[in-house]
Each structure stands twice: as structure tokens, then as C-alpha cells.
Image (cartoon, rainbow, N blue to C red; front, side, top):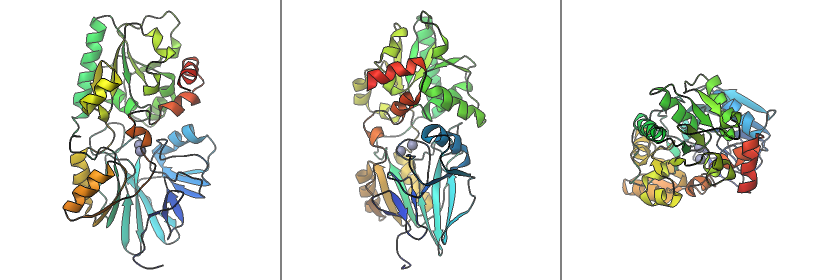
Length: 361
Ligand SMILES: [Zn+2]
Ligand SMILES: [Zn+2]
């Protein structure tokens, strides 16, 4: 094997490390899979064995099955695959999310998975890992994407909730069930102790975050309320797939909002048809993508998903050897749709969620 051979290349199954004979976030069945985090486009079922960061273990078990062969490892803990040393480092994306560092004969490559640089009370902050090649996501690689601070967005959400409450209306906020929902609950905990109601698809995932020690506002499943419950003044969190479903009928007169990075684009806000759009993303915005490439010192950058063409062109103009890598990650994110919610809903046995399945099928 030549000394210049890539440490990671695309094969039909995923991102493959030939020197260590394992895959990262594979999309087809392979014997050995290192998983960056629990979102459905990165953690798929059917792998022979899984490795992921310790805090991500209950998330993977919840989504892939309780008995999947899975090892949890700590951030920074070295793992050997052949003569490749692998370690996981915080990606700041969701609980347990990791960048994968690969070291072989003095060369270091890093696979970012999904990541962000903004403070997030639900997970360890992103760590800059020096490397010669950085394989990065590019979900929001467009100069228009610049995130406001999460605590400021939480204040806007609270104000909207209070306005709805004063008007006697429920406030229903749509967000991804894994990561975004818990981040909202944690950001709100700095501002209020009032209870937030949860769609069935979010209940177990919120419990996993609580077990990991993440401080959030109190929560209660919507399913605990009777058929004639009055939800005026309540804030309800639900996955995007619940919008327009039969499940929504109980929130008569509700104001609806959507929390997503896509809400930065006016047209998306209009198209979604919600009363409010809150700009909150768990991905790196444009300035932090560029900052991260600079800080890790990579001479080569490979972009896996999102606006890869925009990022690649910009980096090439800066003299960086940049190329796209065509992966299927983030397809759902690109469609403004449902990164996670659809499979969460179908997994959920609760009465309210099963209604959703029939509507969404
Ligand atoms: Zn993700
Ligand atoms: Zn992703």
C-alpha cells in the first residue's frame, strides 16, 4: 500500500479506510462501522459491528435496536483497526456526535460527520483536530447562512409562547426529534421552568438526554392528556412530519412555528406555511465552515453533502485542494423535510403517533 494512498475513500458501501478495513457512516451493510452520530442518514441498520461515542450508545440502541453489536468509546480514546489508530472527537452537533480522526504512519485525516461551532448546552463543544485532509459536511455552505446565537433564538421562542399564551392559543413548534428538540428544551431551561409538551416521537429521546445529565425544562407527553384537553397557553414540540396531520387537530387555533437553519431563507418560511420561523441549526454556518477548514490546517478538503460545489469552489479560490465526495448524507435535510421524524414516528407505539403513520404513509 503506497504511502500516499488515501486514508478514506468512497466505495459502494460508504466512506472506507482501506488501511484499517472499516467504514465510517456506511449506507450499505459492512462488517465494521464507525458511526459519527445517531441521525438516520449516518447511522443505518444491518452493520456487523458498530463503534460510536459513549453518549451516543443509547441513541443508536433506540434507533437501530436494543441488541445491535455496539461498542461505546470515549472522546479521545484510541482504537486500533489494523495499523490505523482511530479516535473520536466532539463535533458539537448532537449528544454523542463525533469527528473521526484516523492516523496511519504519521498521516492524519479527519471525517467531520455533521458538526457545528455554536454553543449548545446539550453536547460537548466542537474540538479543532489538526489534520492534513479534512472530510467535511457542507449542509449550509452558502454565504447567506450565519446563525444568530442559540440563547437569543430561545428568547424569541419564549416571547412567541408568551404571546400565544396571552391570546389563549397553543403554540406548536416543529423541529427535528433528535438534537434540535433537546437543544430547544435546554436553551429554554435558562429562561423558564414552565413545562413543555412533547409529541410521542420525542419522549424517549428526551429521556436519553436527561439520563446523560442534560438539564432541560420539565416535559410531559401530549398523550397523557385526555381527548378533550385544553391546550391553550401550552408550548408543544413536534416533529415536522406531524404538521398537517390528524394529531394536530387537538390544538385548536394553534400558532405554529418551525425551528431550522432553513428558516434563514424567507422563501422557505413562506413555503412551510408556519406563523413563525426560528433560525436554529445544528450544522456549521458559512463562517464557521471556513473557520474550521482554516483552523484544522488541512491541505486537502473533501466535502460530503450539502452545498459542496459552493464550498469547493470557494476553497479552491483560496488555494486549498478541495473536491466534492458524492455521498447520500443529508438528502432529507436538503428537502427541508424530515431528517429523523418519519422513522421516529413509525417507531413510536403511542396512540397519537400511530395516527401520524397512517397520515404520512
Ligand atoms: Zn446529523
Ligand atoms: Zn447529516
